[in-house]
Amino acid sequence: MTEAEALSLLNEQKEYFAKGETLDLSFRINALKKLYAIIEKYEDEIAAALKADLGKSLQEGYMCETGLTKSEISHMLRHIKSYAREKRVLTPLAQYVSRSYEKPSPYGTVLIMSPWNYPILLTLEPLADAIAAGNTAIIKPSAYSPATSAVMEKMLSEAFPPEYVKVVLGGRAENKCLLSLDVDYIFFTGSKAVGKEVMKAASEHLVPVTLELGGKSPCIVDKSANIKLAARRIVWGKFLNLGQTCVAPDFMYVDASVKDAFIAEVKKEIERQFGKNPISNPDYGKIISEKHYARVKGLIDYDKVVFGGETDDAALKIAPTVMDNVTFSDAVMGQEIFGPLMPVLTFDNFDEAVKKLRSLPCPLALYIFSSDKGNIEKATSRISFGGGCVNDTVIHLATSAMGFGGVGESGMVSYHGRRGFETFSHIKSIVDKKTFLDLPMRYQPFSQLMLKMIKMFVK
Image (tube, rainbow, N blue to C red; front, side, top):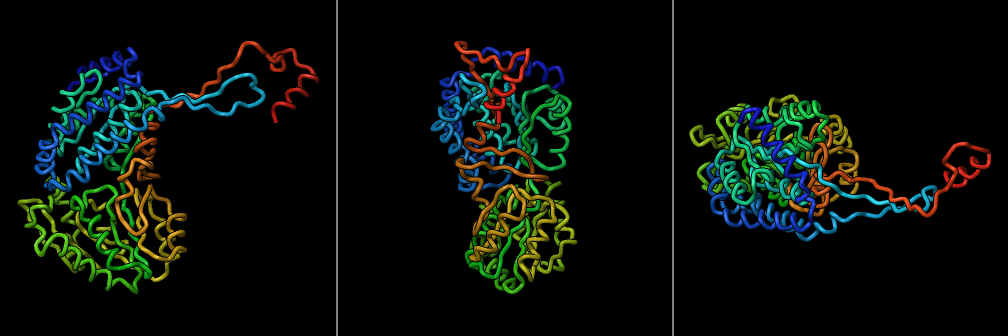
């Protein structure tokens, strides 16, 4: 795509939005139904594309992508009338007689830039929120997941005209063209490094942004935890999509007194869930590209590997790998892993562990496995993080009933459900002042009497 083509697309969408069709609630509802229907129509092609790009099994692809997307659309269809309704708020006595209310309004044309690790979910879920809020959308999926991107381009071009929803395929050149546009909102999911570039580009036009990034999400296991259940749930969340999940438990922070028992259970769970040779398991996926494979493989310290470590360069597969006696200075702790490596670190004092985690950049997620209510309260209240779970992993993002998003270096603004609708909406604050009464106190010339009256109303 050239800059001229990008600008032409933007103008087409802005002109279409200006017609006001997307403001109509019945139009939005119909569009959401079309989106749901087109996903159902192409479910088989979506599954095949996810298998080609990431090696995802049919079950994982539906559970973590297609199914969750459909669930978000269904949520919007159930609640859109409530979300779009004007909300009356209290009017101060000084503004008597008037009606004050908040009116959700779409931004206009939004740019949605999605990643490769969950290409369906992280593209179509924010699209559903943007459509529900009444926007038009330009979508830029990742070039690293070409099969899935191609399916989305095919299905969305069938469902919607380009002046309403348009998928733009390509790589960095297309990203650059789209980021140069004066769109009305940018929604970006991806790495922190690219997020900085997105925010920098947005600042040129003072465009508001949502950044869904990542970080090293800690998983705390204290001595009161149910070790067997913790291992089972952690192994599932850690190695889901081969660890290529923005909210995957990045590293284990385990009480030293239960570390050996925890690692022993983790080994059992890996074998139970993936078999004795996970690389040969057809339901065990692959790393997205040679570049990412080489980076993750380079983080393995074979002197510290206590389980796994097998790799297949041709298939871009790395077995679930557990590393013990890891320290915060090790290479694997220097960046977000985004792969099937499980470094295990230990602590002797819970308060010191909390203090250490507080000193690190804010992660997108935090997990704690514990039956100690005091420890749970300390971790969830004193450590800053986007969201998380107590005695489980990852599942907090699988609900439309609460927002999902980062804080600090892990991102800004949240979405899902009502939060998603509001993310793609500007909430206008409006006062409707009546004309049958006009209090004189605010007008000049002022007097002592007027000042007394003002003090009566404004205090």
